[in-house]
Image 1 (cartoon, one colour):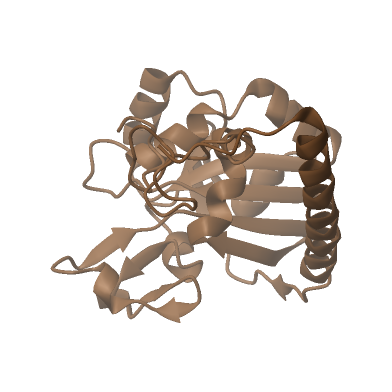
Image 2 (cartoon, helix red, strand yellow):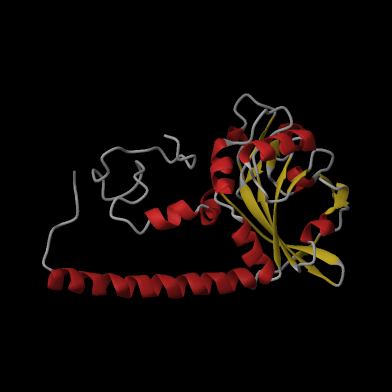
Length: 240
């Protein structure tokens, strides 16, 4: 296996200092990107979306609770599915009550939304022991309008802001994972941002820690190759 070179402590420190220069630049680049993200224009949500939750059918604005910001994690769970996507499940498994409290302390609510009926969501939530609020968009256009469902019958074939009809293969529709962000101002809800694909890595704390290790995520796309004793596919379930 291609383990890192073995060197003296002084040689390691010299290499670490060179890497630190790159890390500091990456931090500055990330801060600059975050600034650009915060400067994105926003769009008023004009449609009256009604979502099914534990307290009955509620408007999108109710998901904010007392917060000004709202983060929605689009969980892949179709109406005819019996369980949520394993990758989405692994990500939500890492969402703790402390994380939700920390977000609320910064005026931000975090909830899950899926297209499966509420009864299915409630059963799965109890099975997984999740405490994060979960709402069903089964009786609304929310998933299609925000591109969390790819559906040929609704002419919604976009994923990650590109036409992706190949995602359906021989299906009429499918669900996709993502995160959408909203702001509430003077009673009006605005859509500020959504991210898909690798943009959802931010919710997987295990990835953040593994990226700091010598072996990395131990997935078959990473460099340098030949380092991990057993390679995994790019599968966020952590069960392979």
